[in-house]
Image (tube, rainbow, N blue to C red):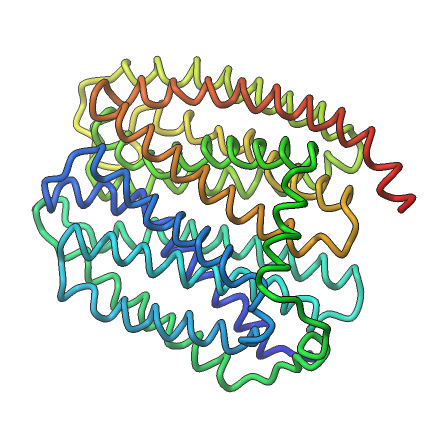
Length: 415
């Protein structure tokens, strides 16, 4: 298979960063136990991750071709390998924050480079779509795997133990393997390096011009509120399992994998459904059902059998039901991204991708911080009831987005 080494490297890159990025929920739980921080304080870990993604994407999106896709990925993998190997020796809340800042910064380079490299190693549109879907699916595999890897290193018998930090030796090894595989692979970037380049000021000007378009403004609100909902649930689900449902820490982390699994399944089925039905009807139906699931699942958290929880078989029903919200939320983000990109001219897709990364990161940070503070000052049930507010706002934004898209698309296509 042509370009098999570079393609395998892209898969491995996404796999390791899926584990690192989505470990934030697990680490939020662990730092509360190990370093005595409050829920509100722990919530800033999401900000260190997401704001670094947004900042690096904003600053380097116009320069990524000058750095080179392969060089950018090698820099990210080499840097994060070193950080992972150092992490077990510097156990503190401060170094945990710096870890996620490093992960976010590195992932920004990885994501921009991976998305761009796919176009260089595929021959046609069908091959491009196929490889993109496989890589995104492998990202979900990484998330699922990460929950079980981290739970293996958690010591339930000694909650204060920092032995879980040894997981970073393994993750550093995987990152180093990805580095070596990419380093030994050949990637022809001549087609993009020879393109006419604009100055950073010109690139920023074009980005701001794109942002003032009404449809783009409404879209970034959709992206912002969707990721706010998703990350507020994903980042705090292990803590919810542990502190509200009273599951052991390791089991709390393992059972959070249900959310990742249901999200992957939801995107698989959505790919078939959205070929036949109007995207707005599908997405609004999913969001209404998501709100209904919240109203059904959270009260179940109050119903406990009183029996000791030792494993999946003795876990309360709420631990299985609530994470299924991923099945319903899953279609929203890919669908709105596809709609906005298909509405705008191809030449603006690069800038639009940058805006998607930036506002998604801001939404994730906001959701986690709000949820963490509600968790601290009220309780976990109230924190997850909060998701009903952004779900309602997102439904309104999607309706407005659909109306603008119908008005704009004919004129954009004509141009």
